Image (cartoon, rainbow, N blue to C red; front, side, top):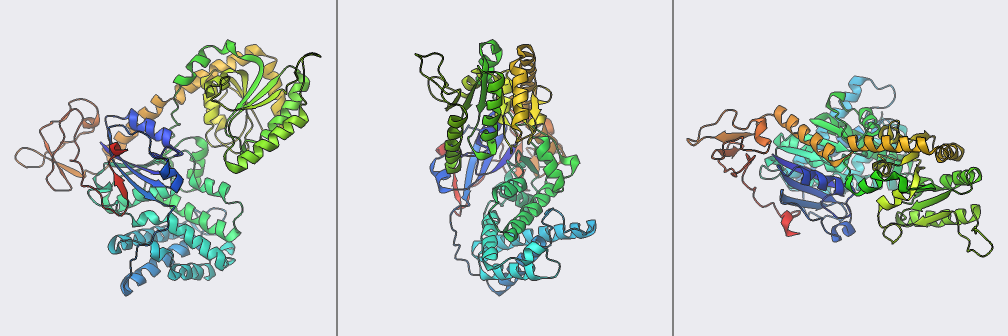
Length: 583
């Protein structure tokens, strides 16, 4: 089977967000062939290069979202009219979406009206894609005065919601620029029969812009689409746009909501990483029949030693591990630890992690100052050097060479976040067999089940009481740690993740219409020439048979499990393209 893996700001780049998960998936499914279609977010991301790619990666095509693109394409009168009509319809669909629920319409809108607006958005989106295919690109048109005026007319039209009506010229210019960047995949030349049209399945590693090529591959070439989301893009937009004007936030939220609804409607299967993401997807219109929860796969091997020897932990030490940033709410943790110290004077707190960006660095300085204020250095005797019971450390040094060593150093692991998606750090602590105390945010409860204590966020007293209860009860702490390790090994391993996706791939392919014709030696079509089991390792298929993609002649690779097209032609030059082995 040939998989077109679609990423944005992730694999195969070294600094990619979902790079590790995608790399494990590709390496674990070595019986399949992968073509990577990667959209980069920044110049620095591209400069850091790629991770080493396994041999089953046949081709890599990349496209940047960060650089300015001037396609030097001059539209004729008919093309300009087509663009104005399509972009106007797109803008109207955004301006009539309610700010409280962008995937649906404004309050009072009927179900039929909401479906009509969803169809309007989809028709406009695919109309722009067809125009880009006919004319060679859209970037200049999407930044043109025509686009700004179309958006302004939609904001001033009857039926537009209040936030859109209040948009001013700077807001319109900002939204137009952001939409141009988000819609840039429409102008790529990836949607031909020898590109995404030649894959059996498109797998988008996230929603939003990364899923756009999959939508167009389905529209132009009828390739089935699988969408995996460990963090829903609409939720991310709400969390990362706090300083924008209400008009900008509302229009961009409407775009992300409409795009998410269209992605979920066209996808064959949707795989949220947790129930928290699943609820967001259902709110954006995802059909429950298409949803399959697949938890992130994590490598348990580095934490095996710590998990098998929980008695080595310091029974009075609490550990926090993660990225230092305001969302982790270390301030509440420090105030909670002040109460813990009053109840258990011998307790210590180790905060292990590096700051995340300039904001994280400033937050770390603030937390260190607060710790020095709350906990003056203490000495064991008159001739000893005082030390603070709270330490700020990073992994990689002699005391804590790895994250596993950090978790192993304490008997209790604490998570104090106010915002969290899937708590990967918490799962690592579970692999180590440590009892945990966490705040009830994101997918925390789903991850730990009944193997840890959960308290409300921003509640230092509740956090302190839960920690003291476990510090004073080592037997309960040991039971919770053992149960947490067993749960993590059952649900959150790489093997579980890979097995789930392998089954989903075969399920989608078994329901997809036949897109290839297998020919016998006489050149006649061979019925049932590519059964589902042909994609399982082993000599299930006839290695001498010939494959014809979309009606044309072709050749097949011999060997176990191969029933795919010959290597597709080298892609065009409008985007960066190279063989995976070149880097």
